[in-house]
Image 1: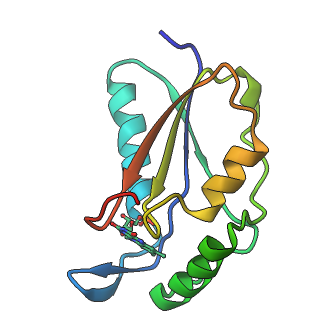
Image 2 (image 1 turned 135 degrees about the vertical axis):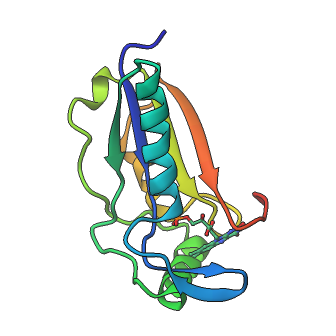
Length: 137
Ligand SMILES: Cc1cc2nc3c(=O)[nH]c(=O)nc-3n(C[C@H](O)[C@H](O)[C@H](O)COP(=O)(O)O)c2cc1C
């Protein structure tokens, strides 16, 4: 059983597409909700996991269209935007749940940044993905 568990996630609050309509879903995106549920479920089993939100230094637009436009450009450029430091004590984690939404059939650019910024050697990574019904390309 791993000793130190981290749940690192990226999630975009604000507007999203729901049944082909743009809806403001509030400050907590789907992946953030899933990450918190995962922490709570583990907690019920007596397993402690720390949550860490991956945040780009320049936040995405709250609007769906704005986020779509920026992320499309990042996807085309293979960009890895600057993200926040942390989590504290990263080296000690041996199991990392890594959560993110499916963006353009792949990982969002801030996840690429996280993977580039952090040494994953010797750690077990378990990805979890929220999506709008499509698969990874
Ligand atoms: C920029 C952008 C691109 C997306 N691309 C896809 C996609 O390719 N396939 C898919 O199934 N859903 C796609 N979605 C929908 C999200 O994956 C889905 O709404 C997800 O649950 C959002 O998580 P969040 O609220 O934590 O950001 C996209 C959403 C956005 C904003």
